Image (cartoon, rainbow, N blue to C red; front, side, top):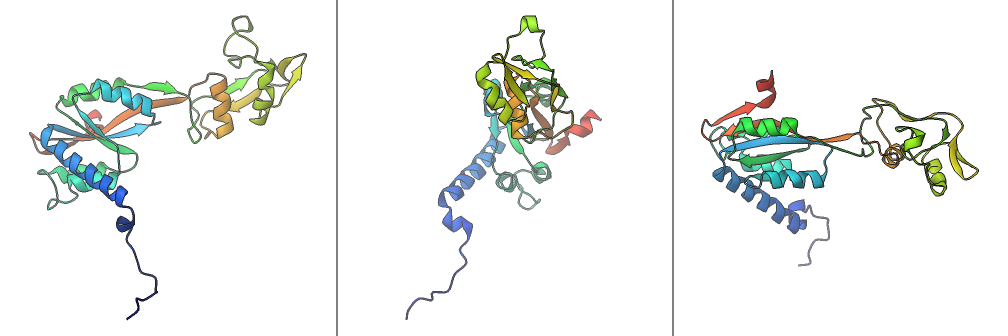
Length: 235
């Protein structure tokens, strides 16, 4: 009897073998870490930068970070009392929403929270970030820092870059080999969501507006079998 040619429903897990294997590995690694560390933190990342996350990993080389599929990590912890890997661990799962990860450590919560509340790295903003200040380039010759330093301490922008910044929206022109503006130009205003042209201009002028931070949301203690919300502690 010939096989039916009708379309059949195929689950994604059947078509993406590699993805399924990675999820299974993450699931197993999270549960293994839960068995070997005293504290499990849920953390959120602002302005993600792999280079800075690598620095933090090095600082906590005796601990483990997981930054993967939140649904898989929540499933590994257990989302209900019947499924939870450790007693009351399911109470941590609701915090696994959005751009978050898991941090396993034997260091005391007070030490962890103190470190991350003080840790911040400033970097150049990417498109979609909200400007934390207004930045305006003054009229006249355009300098490399866009007016952040005095002309005596700065250097004029190379004429070869004039077409590039004009493409990014600055109404510049060349005057006797100098890049000039006829009027002040506001690259961005505080509170404005930045686009790619604005971020490119800000980077060119050396203006960093993105702060890489790791915010601890809540943590579980294997000793007390309880979940503590960090915001509630601060209040």
